[in-house]
Image 1: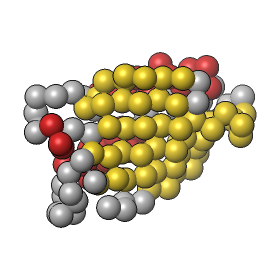
Image 2 (image 1 turned 45 degrees about the vertical axis):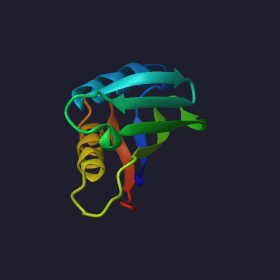
Image 3 (image 1 turned 90 degrees about the vertical axis):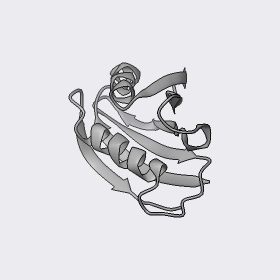
Image 4 (image 1 turned 60 degrees about the vertical axis):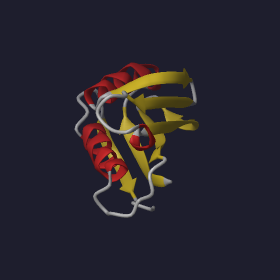
Length: 118
């Protein structure tokens, strides 16, 4: 199973976060399928890659450390494929999603840390 984690601190009001995340996910061909105040799950839309390569994104929202102007996210991008190559589909999607988060129009990235573990 391929798995890629990242940590972001975004300059955004927590009330606006879910709507902004949904826009970013849709720009990456992901469908937001579940959301609570502390957790969001999105899944890649089927049709372009085989089913085991479809990516799932989980976002943990740390409301305990959130300030009126900033929130910390823990992001995990994963799928069922074995990461035998560094350019596997999950790694490519991870780079696209983290790039879209860093370029998000609705927030400023205050801090980010990405780690490619397989």
